[in-house]
Structures are given as C-alpha cells and as structure tokens.
Picture (tube, rainbow, N blue to C red):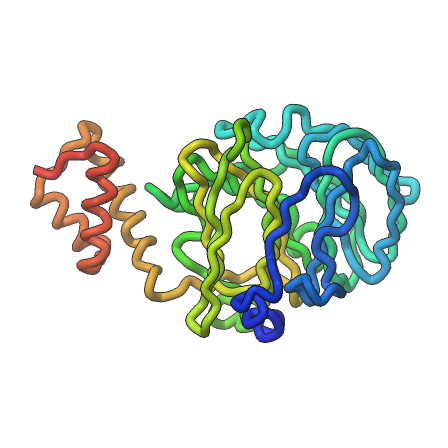
Length: 335
C-alpha cells in the first residue's frame, strides 16, 4: 500500500524492521500484527494456530477472517454453523497435478471457535460486512497455470471480494524447483483502478516439500522499488514475509518445490496488479513460446519461422534474445 510503503520502506531498508519471521511451530497466535510498530503493515493481520493447543475462540469485531489449513483436521463453529474438513498430507500431497487447498471465511461481528489437530493459518482485514460464513473446498477452485518457462507457477485463488469477502484476497502459489513467481514484475501500491492497480498489503507464508539436512530447502524473496527499497531474504520452510508494497518476486531453490499461502488486504474491492512496463515484454515472450510449442512438435524451428513468430508477437530485441535463451534451455533447435 502507498501509505504503508511510506511508513516502512525506509525502516526495512535500514534494517530497523525485518519483514520476515521464521515460525518454529511452538506457539499459536499472531505473527504479523498491524498495531505492532515492528510489523510493516497498517491493515493486514496474519497468524497461525497449532490446533492441538486449542480449542481457540475469537471475535472478529470490525474485521473479516479467512482460515487456511496447512496440514489439519479441523472443526470451525460460527454461531449455529459448523464446518468440518481436513487437509490430509499437507499442501504438496496432490501437487503438481492438482491442489487440495481449502479455506473458511468468517465475516465481521462474528464469534467463532476452532478445534482439531494440525496447523491452520489465519488472515484478517477490516470489513464493511454483508457476507456470510462459508467454506471453500478444493473442488470449487481450479489450479491455474501462470507464466511460462522459468517464471511458470500454479495458482489457486480461494477467496475474493467479488464472491466471498469484502476485502481479503486469499490463495496459494506453487513453484516448481528453480522457477520464479511474481514475474513479470508487478505492484499493487496505489488506488488507481483506471490504470488497473489497487492499494493492497500482502503476506506470504512459505512452505517447502523437502526440508531435510542441516541447511534444508531454500528460496529467495526479493522486495524492491525505484525509490530506494532493495532487499533480498533467504526463505525456507515456514518463513512468513510481510510485504507492505513494491515489487516482490520470489524464486524456489533447485532442491525442492515450494508453495506459499498468501493474502492481500487494503482498500476494499477488487485486486488490481499493475505490470511494471520495463518487464511487461515477458508476456509477449509467453505468447511467442506458446505459438512455437503448439505448432512445432519436433522441437525444431527454422530461423525464418522463428523470426516470423517474433514479428507476429511484436517482440523487442530484448524479447527475441530471451526467447532464444528459453528455447535453447528447453532443448529446442533453431536452424
């Protein structure tokens, strides 16, 4: 968010505020509290329940809440409404073929109780109300492929303001080993719907399939803009990152696939992500790559056909260079 970045970008750059927290699974409760001056949020809240330490009771007040199981069998009671479900085996159990993600939405001015076993994350943000409690099952939300080549990932969107919430947008992103997410670079730092941009804070809760050994799996979370914020963080299994704004791409290391559960909160309404123009050309590269791979089953393309495709997709010189590199790494021959 624009205001949140103004408040915290300098503090993050100087190291006065650390937007990352490693969660050791020992305690349940708030991880990122917008009322805490060491949390670079003004709106969004994030926490984790270890359900064996419960049951837990909570009042939403003027905020709405979304619960997402990590690996859990759970029961959520909201008034006379009861939701019971489970996420067996954790988020990687069915990936990359399909997602087993679920979510429970609790509106403002509600009291709810959660019990069970396993791990459950929760997010909250201010709400104008007018919604009902509900559960979102995995079969209701598709796993969607985004990006191509080395910036390919799979996304499942669980909660959006147009269907379930008034503010919160919640989902999960799966990243194969070595691939980037948050690419092409985008931001959601201003309330500018005409330009396709909204004003949202965001949180990532990173998980890794494999975490054995002294070092475990790793990835890299970046956070930067063109006004002085420029930070990189090593992430591992159960690293939470508070993202007040700016560009925030992330890459999974080569030793494990990774996944992050994410949520956005800010000004109520739809999410709008503004692509930074300097990097928008990657979407043209995606179109060219789709065209070549769909029309050339033998993974061989002539130089003439390659150049023709680049022209059809309006690739810049930089785009042509990236496309050549991508095809080469994928085993294509340009003759």
